[in-house]
Amino acid sequence: MMWMAPAIGALLLIPHLVAVLPRKRASERAAGKADRLRLIASAFEIVAVLVFVRQLGTWTPATIALWYVVVALAASALAGMMYRSAGLPWITDNSSHARRILGTAAGCLVATTVIVVLLLP
Amino acid sequence: MRGRRLLALSLVIATATMFTGVLLGPHIPRSSTAHTGDPRIAGRLAELASDGAYHHLSVAVVTPEFTKFAGLGADERTSMEIGSITKTMTSLLLIQAEADDVLDIADPASMYLELGTQPFTLEELASHRSGLPRVESGIGAFLQGYVSQLRGSDPYTGGVDDLVSAARGSGLSGAGSVSYSNMGVAVLGQAIASARGLPYEQVLGQGIFEPLGMTDSFAPVSSSGLTDDAPRGYTSSGRPADPWTGNAHAPAGGVRSTATDMARYASALLTADPALRVDPATSLDPRFDDDDGGSIGLAWFMDERDGRTITWHNGATGGYRSMLVLDRAAGTAVYIAGDTANGPVEGIAHALLAEATRGDFR
Image (cartoon, rainbow over all chains, first blue to last red; front, side, top):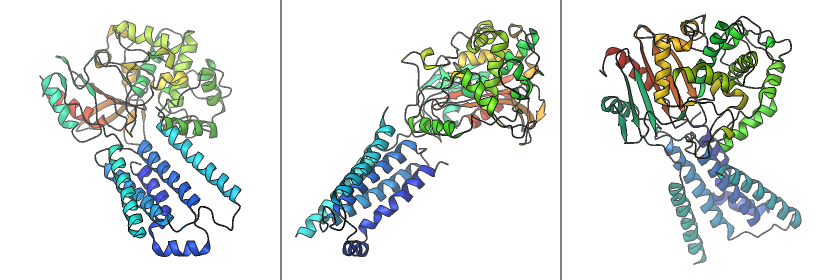
């Protein structure tokens, strides 16, 4: 059980690491799936995962190293997103702008709610 | 040129994330270096707690010759949640009530609470053999428990009516065999209170705290029973935990006490103090075997350790861990409590008890 929160966090972060894979970036871009809105939503999710792991993990001298592993995964994902964002449009042309904006806002709101609930004293 | 700038910016973001992760990382509790009380016991306590997530610890060592206290960052007057050790007090209230002819431990609990056709007796509740689940089941209770875990708050918020209703509607599983149930002992405590016609906390005060002079022990029952500056422990992730008062579940884990008072309690149990008005052996003696090779009395567990019979109960709340161990044959006891939810104290208690019984702290 002591490993559960960091393990869940790592599993949730792994999909975001796609952003650091050059080949995946190119293929997604070609398919018109990636845009900056999606990256923004991902960034919120990553921060929410970090807060989740930080607040619900069982931290002892033996398990603290897992926190740094999760932080390293998050740092890699966020850096990859930054690097990837330059070549992307804000919103892909083949989707409804209003729907995308609302969807992203809703996703960010959920992530923010998780963060606030977990951080409130 | 633009690619280099982007790469540099990405590295800055990665570095900033790592830096923030280190700066705002989890708080790992560290044992306080401030020793209190008996220097030998405090020193031994520091050794035993050197490897683990401890912060403040308070210990009482009771032998036929002396009672000594020690602590790390806490002393014998530090108030802490004793958690499920409260169950041993509830079982003592049960035998007191029987001695006063208020009830019989073989009575069905439904004689005292609106439990419908639930068949379990008061003795079965006290020995975790009622078949009731560990905690209230159902999606509502699950969600409440989940939110409590997220928020570090007391999961036991329901009143007596809620508890009785949940117990009335609960399925029974494995009745007759030992299966630990917080709900069962909570129902037991409320049944005793109902039989006496008093609130549980008043029965507890009159039956144990007042006769033994445990002036710093009480069951707050709800948050209104605590002052705003009541001590808080730390959750397993290092966050300050809300106090657990238990509400209707107070008989299963809602007492706050100090090492001074718990030493008095342990001593009364070991010596059958007349102030208790009953022979505590009635609750301390083994009655049934459990599945772990030990046995159970009325709330108390018994195990063999190094050829000695150890009688014990531990406790855990959102922010505290506790343990009371008795070597009844030697007349020795150790009580320990700590203010971190992931700082196990059971091993420390057993080690100190063995050493006290050997005479190490004379």
